[in-house]
Image 1 (cartoon, rainbow, N blue to C red):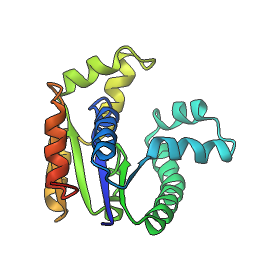
Image 2 (image 1 turned 90 degrees about the vertical axis):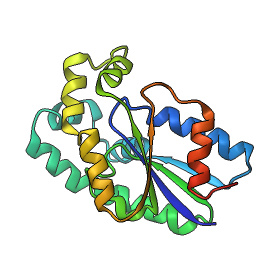
Image 3 (image 1 turned 135 degrees about the vertical axis):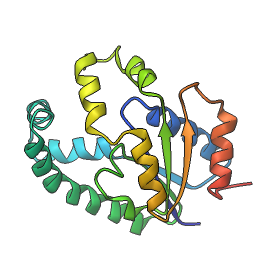
Image 4 (image 1 turned 180 degrees about the vertical axis):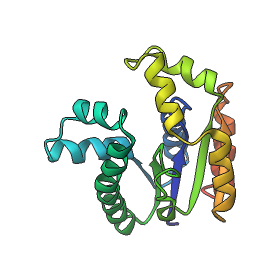
Length: 185
């Protein structure tokens, strides 16, 4: 089976945790799957091109036009990288991409799993990091609100699933979601 699944959700929603659970389930069920993290891909592209991420982040998170220009530059590179991986792979590909919907690059995936979380929990999860509450809220506001993401998913005419991580779902809920994806019985 060849299938590409996008995993999206706002910052602090629990995407990375969900990916770890999906990896575990795939391994236990011998599902041929690879996992790609767009943040890592982006970092590697910037590193190869000797672009200072800290300076870039300061610029793009404080200037909407700079963010638009950056996306025009980086998103085609990300798309090319992902397309190469999709063409070469015969199994399941999970692509973790916070801005999959915002960047309008959802056409490269067959289905989408949205990791949903209440905003106050997102903020709590991120407060121990290095951003600070003000920057966390600013980044959340730069992304589509959860309700907007859900509306966009409904309009795509593409298979999608939502997992609410607000109350830390059990592994069984992740398993059920992958069964709905048709990855195993």
